[in-house]
Length: 472
Ligand code: F0G
Image (cartoon, rainbow, N blue to C red):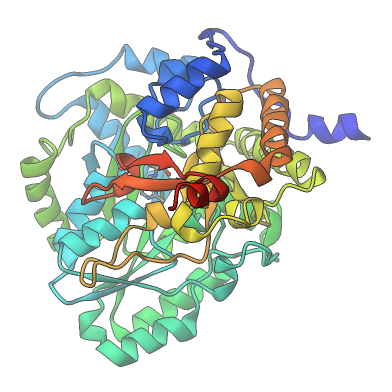
């Protein structure tokens, strides 16, 4: 029986090229961590064994994608690869116009400048770091309208990415529809644990917005993963193809921003896609200033070709089942060991609940940052903080945002690691769990102004007893 279960998500590919991994000693890791200011973003990747920092740009491309790289048309203007990408995005996502960008935040930047006026409110199903920052830099104020269950790591709601329509209506009532240019809907919701939104909820969100003349923007970065959850969990959609569900999702929105570095199985790339002609004209004009000509948007022709091929590979059922199957394999193994993780498991990552993992640490000791650092020290495995450090500060008051979730993200690059690597990961987390009571926490000693989690530096807190004996 178990064998058959594994077969259900066994990798639908074999490995043709390998990249050696370096195993470090604990002393080497302690030194590397101190040099990196206890921030896993500042580690050198050569000092990392399994890199679970992100699934962004870390995917293994297929032989077909690599072959596609060889037919890059590196023309400054009018690259053949752009026209193939444009046709494929139209077919797969359904929007009429496509503006390539170097990655997701390039598209977020264009869209935010295009549609947000100073003082506008931009409701969204939980924030994402770069998305919110671009909204704020354009003068907007992000308002969280995700359902309450998304903030509860124990809620088993199948669609924790859903928009709370009552919260959305309240924002519209309070500020007026004219101050709400669009609702920003992510599928899946990264910061909530890779949780999907249901088609039913997206449809209802669309209907509400239409009544008020408000647009809906999809963050389609992991929308094909979202489609997989809809096919598995949403009544009436069993057996529907990922391609059809994706089209249906996009059809309920006016535009999408895309970081192709996730779903689309490439190392770099993104796009803005939209229907409105006038907005497209403006975006196409603006992209020249910030990214590059509208037929390459900061990308090489070969990057666009790899992205085009990635769109087909990502919509393949067997691929997506293996991709999400691997994530769920690790989640089940960790849960079986009693490790606190966010439930239910989302699409791209397993999220450790650092608040429950290290309950003796106050928020000010950065529990998730600490846990990510300790996991690296233990095993050379690199994860990412997704808690109070990532949440940053309110731009007006300067106070720390206090997100309900304090998480460490174990993010799975697509088609990169094996099941044995997954088992090593579970062992490593268990080893940190066994000595969790001795872990002292971290103080932030350097804080950059924007997206602080990338470059902040930390130092271990002195243990309480030591602090007392030193009069601290
Ligand atoms: N939207 C979502 C939902 C994302 O997860 C990301 C990136 C972006 C937008 C921005 O795209 O990086 O191409 O500019 N997420 C990465 C991560 C960084 O690790 O989750 P980008």
